[in-house]
Image (cartoon, rainbow, N blue to C red):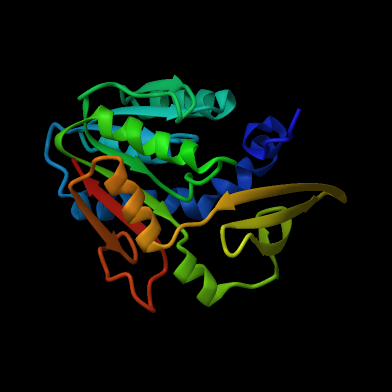
Amino acid sequence: MEYKWYEDENFWETFQPVLFNEDRIKNTPLEVDKIINLLNIKEGSKILDLCCGVGRHSIELAKRGFTVIGVDSNEEYLKMAIKKSKKEKVNIEFIKDDMRNFYRENHFDIIINIFTSFGFFEDMLDDKKVIENSYISLKKDGKLLIDMNGKETLARIFRERDWYRVGDFIILEERKILGDFEKIETKWIIVKDDKIKEFTIKLRLYSAYEIKSLFKECGFSKIEIFGDLTGSPYDNKASRLIVVGTK
């Protein structure tokens, strides 16, 4: 069978302390502030955290009084999210499902897909299916936010190699661009306690024009592009590609 990195439980288990490190957890309330302001989320809104991981945004949103559902395909991450939500005494429905399959028709006011959780799949039609599902799941005037690295921002900052520390881990990254800037392939080498593990992932890349066109194909009537979660312009100073579609 073809290896699919995003289905590799060993990858997600190994990188959990890196992907959800202490600094990222600390930054969650500020990120949620920005999301609420950017989307103008109203009191009582129903929110879907798509690819919720360990639930850091789901839990923070629920603490603000919103009705939240978190969806992820990783069972261990969901167990961690459920445990944390109980500790924080917030009521969240966490669901194990593939984002290509999940939808609840006309149910949500807001859907968020944060922290480069889009573009995993080999076939671009699978990406389109995720956006179509989100469109179906949104109420009229509902909004979908996707946060990713854009082609434009990545081209400006691209480095073939990096290394850095996260807690007890040493991380080495080797990157290359594939298929006329269609995808980025990253080899992650993680070192801890003299043990080495290697994983290779591939992500589909989108320009602002390409992701905006995809949203339009899926039915979104109003599509906005931003350079970060504060709503800054998507220009030569942009740090992220933030796309917001309104149904």
